[in-house]
Each structure stands twice: as structure tokens, then as C-alpha cells.
Image 1 (cartoon, rainbow, N blue to C red):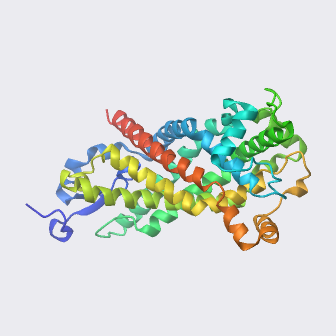
Image 2 (image 1 turned 120 degrees about the vertical axis):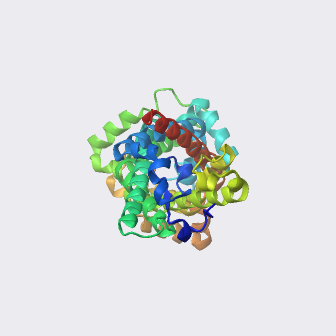
Image 3 (image 1 turned 90 degrees about the vertical axis):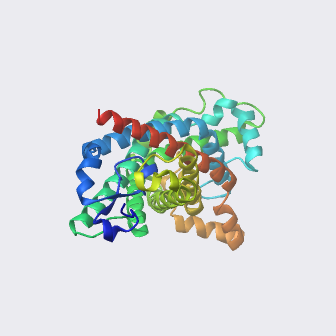
Length: 375
């Protein structure tokens, strides 16, 4: 029997099933020339239209699931970041203290419902968020592989540079089109909630005092124009471009490493089978860790910019460089470093399980959709 690891003897080539769930992106499936038609007819039905549709549907379910479960941690991180800048863009809008103290203050002033302040728009946007990221990444990866096959290369596989490029493009497109306005509205509502909490002392905030996402959007457009919703778009693109690039790369590397360590003998590497749930969860967790390790400082600067009081003059909008200079002038280099990573406990504590949930739900939802397509 031909050794499947010796490609030059089998006359085959390596194919990566990129239109399948992300748990299978890095599986090298060795297919000999005479076995291509026999062993892979089901992949022919994964057309570009199916890839986009399946990515959007699976991404919607996975993104909304992780958001509902872990949104309170997002709120705590944003409040802590906003409090790390006492003047300027943040305006001291956040509640001060560590995660537990901020949690107690939030519940004290607004009840448990305050933990979901500003969630309607981010929850609805998850269908677009995750659908865009996975679709753009999948399509670009498949296009690169198609190009390499047309060049008649013996092995068509993605390099680290390929994965970083595809992830950066996916994150940048999503941030520029959708993420920036949604997070601006969310950050404005969180900042308003914490400002009201400070002004009310020990009293609770009235139910209708905070307002709604749509009401805030209407007021912002009427006051400063629709472009204000994209305040901080540059730093958001940097955050998500770099972050998503590291996300997909770390996921592929960690998944393949775990498969080689625990499941190689079961045929997962060469058979293209779905990895175990444990490996899927673990690789998603590693991806989330990689994302926040590189993107947290950029996320903090974005929060400073987007948490400015929307009722103030548009002149209050400052650039990332101006925000950093202001922090440096007040607190020095160590102050900048500590404030850029404010809320890291919540970011990692939320980001790792969120990514694990997202990747796990996405993988199995995508697989179910592919099976439906092939029936």
C-alpha cells in the first residue's frame, strides 16, 4: 500500500477542504489522481454561493449564541476601559475598580438588566459580523488554493502568510463596514449608563432614562451626521485586521497540533473527518487568546474614542495618537502601558470561551448545512 505521506510516490496532491467548517480548514487530504472523482464527489456541491450562504447562517447562530452568554463580560470590559482615561475621549465615563467592583456597581445602579445594556444592536449584528468574517476568509483561502492548483504546483496548501492575509482582509472588511457603527452605539450606551450611575449616587437609574440603540442612532445622525457612527473606524480596522489574522492562524495551527498529538492514528489528518469536540473547543479557545493578546491595546484606544459624550461637540473626537499623547502626558509610559491593557482579565475571560463557543457552534452548524446541501 502506498505510503500516504510520500506524495511524490502516489502521484497525488494535498487538498484543503476550505469550504467546510473551520475545524477542517487545515486538514491535508491526500488524494491520488485516480481517486479524485471516486472519493470527493460531495465537495462538488460546495459552490461559492453555498459557501457564502452556509457561512452566514452558521456564523449567525454561533455569534448570537456566544453574545447572549457572554455579553455581560463585554460590558464590564468596556466600562473598565472607559474609566482608564480620566479626561478626553473617555471622559471618565466608565466605572472604576476591578472586574468584581465594576460588576457590583453596575448591578447596584441598574439591576441585572444593566449587564445587557446596549445588547439589541450587537446581537442583531452578529448575523452580519460572523457571516462576513467567515465568508470573506473562506472565499479568499479557496481562491488562493485554486490559483496554486492552476499553477500546477505539486502541493496546494496555505502558508502562514496566506492565512494572515485572508484573516486580515476578512477582519478589515467587517470592521470598516459593520463593526464600527455597532460598537460605537454600544459604547455610547454603556458610557451613558455609567455616567448616569455616577450622577445618581446610590440611587437606581430610571427604566427609560438610558434610552435605546435606535433612539441614540437617530439623535447622533440628527446632531452630528451619519459619519459620526463611524468614529474610530481606523483603529477598529487595525484591531480587527490584525486580530482576525491571528485568530484564524492560531486556530489552524493549534487544531493541527492537537490532531497530530491525539487523533492522528484515528485517521483525522488524512481522512478529513471532523475533529473531536474537545479539539474543536480547544482550538477555538487558542484562537480567542491570540486575538485578544494582539488586539486589546487597540480595543482600549477605540473605546476611549467612541465613549466620548455624543451630546458634546464633534471637536471632542480625537485621534488615537492624540489619546495616547494625552495619557502619556498625565501618567507617563507605565501609565500608558497599564491603561492600554485595562480590563485584560475580562477580555481574556470572555474572549477565550466566546471563541470556543463560536467555533464549536459554527463548525457543527456548517457541517449540518453541508450535509443538507448534499442530500
